[in-house]
Every structure is written in structure tokens, then in C-alpha cells.
Image 1 (cartoon, rainbow, N blue to C red):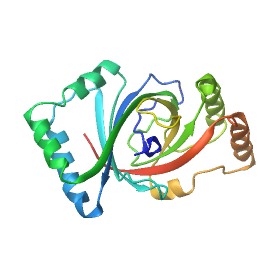
Image 2: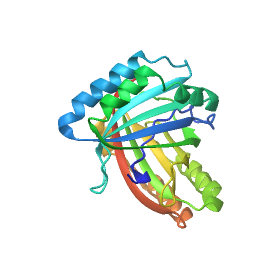
Image 3: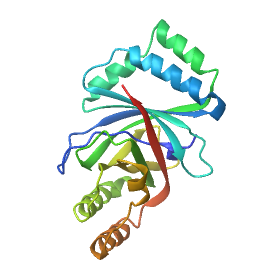
Image 4: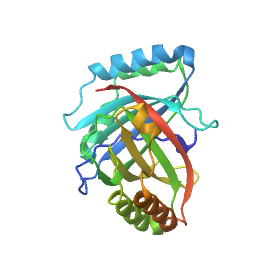
Length: 228
């Protein structure tokens, strides 16, 4: 699967530079007839697997995406501590893990994993059930400018949910290495994303002009199934 399948579940601070949030994502392709079985397998394993208090696991579906994208579900693991995240990932071993993988292999057609961290984020609510990712190819030398342009945009608009920008560090493909990720309280809010007045329209236009050297690849949307 292409890296543009990535959808990210992040933690955000309230209108301040946040601490780095590190993430590890597992992206799955599952036939619709097997979706309920996979949901049950994921729920059974992660409900019973011990994790640190500073680690969050979220399981989501991916119902809205481009026609070339095949991913249907994502397991997103996040922490403000890179060590806690690494320790949790390393804990995914043993007989219970092997049994889980064996059962999942009967229903998962394809899978991949990627990891990275957020760089700047705003908004206090991490419980919003709908998340949208906008994915970009950004030259490494332009990354700081991209983040700066994003932070200027966010200070100029009213975004009701959480929103942030981050970097794909491991598992990037075809130059896709940067994302913007926002969350919404419901589908109606997601439908109404965009500038709401002339000032916000100007801010969006200035942002687009500032990142002209970057390539927008796609957007896709996930819906939360369960948090662990």
C-alpha cells in the first residue's frame, strides 16, 4: 500500500506548541465481509494487552478515500514519550501476539506500518471521532517553512476541532513525508470544513501560496471504532 494511506491519531495541546507526540500506525486492508471479524479480533487483543498510562491505542475505519486507496482500517498507537511508545511496540510479542497475528492473517489482505511525530498542533479535544489527513510531499529543506506557514494559517482561522502538522519518519514512500491532520466532532462538521468568511479565505490562499513547492497527494478520512 502507498504511504498516502496514512491516517494519524494525535494528541493536541490548547493553542500552544505541543510536546512531540510520537505515533506508530498499522494500516490494514480488509474485505467488507470480514470487517466485523477483524474488529472483534483487534478489540479482543488490545482490550487485554497491558500498556502504559501514557500510551493510547485507537482503532478506526477508513470509509472516505480516493479510488486508488485500498486501506480499510488503521490501528494508531501514540505517546508523548518515544520510549513508552517503543516499549509498547516491543511488548507486542509472545504466544498471545502470535495467535492474534495468525488469526488476523486469515482476514487481512494487506498491511503496512509507518511511524513519525507531530511538529505543531492546536486544539484541546482528542476525543473527536472523525479525523481527516491531508498528505504532502515536502522537500526536507522546506519542512520548517511548511510548518511555519501552517501555524500562521491556524492562528488566522477558527477550526472547531484539533488540528496539527507532522512528519512521517519511518515507512515513507514516494516522497510522501508530511501531513496535516484535523478532527471533527461529527460528520456535519467534517462536511463544512473550509473558510467561513473572507478573512479565512485569504488565510487559506496565503497558505497555499506559501507551500507552492510542496505537492498535495490526497486526503482521506477515518472514523473511530474504539479507544484502548
